[in-house]
Length: 113
Image (cartoon, rainbow, N blue to C red; front, side, top):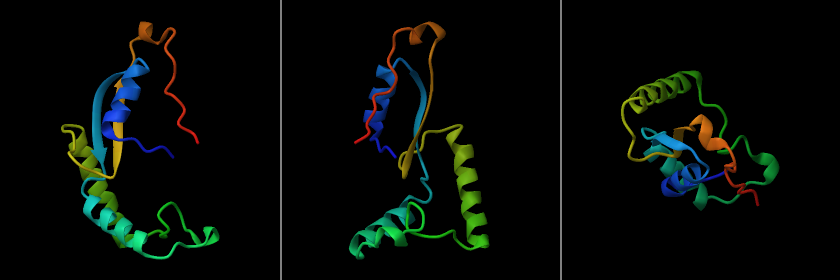
């Protein structure tokens, strides 16, 4: 997984020859809850690698909560079609490249360790 700051992602996408149409945050509505969970996780002792359940260390929430969260994210997706969201847990970039602009352009640089 790669993590970018907004400015860094914009620079990398643009330098690769793409024109950014939208660069916005995602998971804005859940940002406060996710920030709280991450803060608590930093305070707790680390789990052994075999004990992790997914990227967050949590399993799938109960079905009613999962449906409610899906609804929140669907609403946020509808908002993102019209507006850029000011904060969030992740970034979403929609970009286009003109057919002639990709000749000789390099792909996004690899950030692998």
